[in-house]
Length: 124
Image 1 (tube, rainbow, N blue to C red):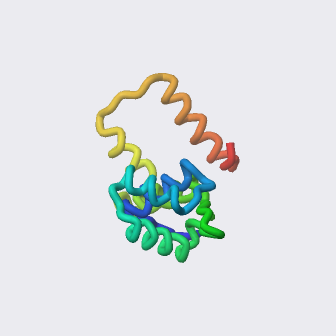
Image 2: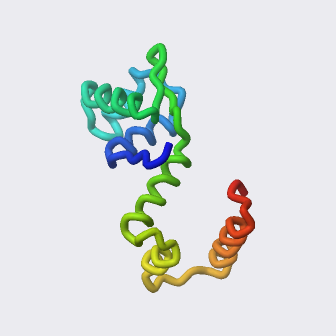
């Protein structure tokens, strides 16, 4: 799934599927209208595009995700760091913090995440 990027509208549409799957296509049209203000034709156009990209599945008028939301978030996050901060995670974090303070619990949680990745346990 390397470098799979979704446009903003595609991502918001996929979130509807992730939040409600499995989802009959008719219900997806209804949710897209309510949550995104889309017409039926727009919904089916974007659905077709995301099926072609391999993000969603549409089988027997039932829509499900082919790729978990977490995988898309990981790719999007990497793309931001690569594009904007030349791949530097410390630079990204420094800019992201922007003078903001964090609690001791947040600092401990961040340290634990860093330690897990330093130790090679990427699944914890």
